[in-house]
Image (cartoon, rainbow, N blue to C red):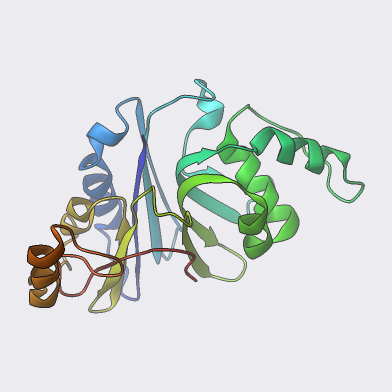
Length: 214
């Protein structure tokens, strides 16, 4: 299943590493095999965390957050890319981009596609179910995306000067900036439909994605 969590903060804290560890640990049931965190040191403006349920590649080569070959992109990914072997073949057949694969995971394939073609084109090329968080170290930008049908959850929102995101609300709640105020409009939607439709969530300042974000 896997799970991801993270935050971007305009006010980095010396406790950032501990905070992302707690956020990530809250998702243990989604990924009991291994946990990983990464911070963009020394500024620590962004932090990514991942809980892994290893399926396609059981080795350390599939651990996340994962860095692209150049080191420009860092990715936390939940889901499965169904056509990742076809994408590997396409990348290997290109004259402008030679890939030295480290493992057999679709996460590595996804990162290679992003590095070769850019984020938007990579999203257009992949087929699957996914929630993705990518930090572009060169552009200093955070990119989020969710599969078109919304099979994989992704919650996000600003809390003061901090942008939170994750696979479940409880990961966001683990951040000290989280505001637990209930969205009464979303509560009305739940009573009417027996679920809360995107882009709303039960939390006032948090949304859930139904497609690509930037």
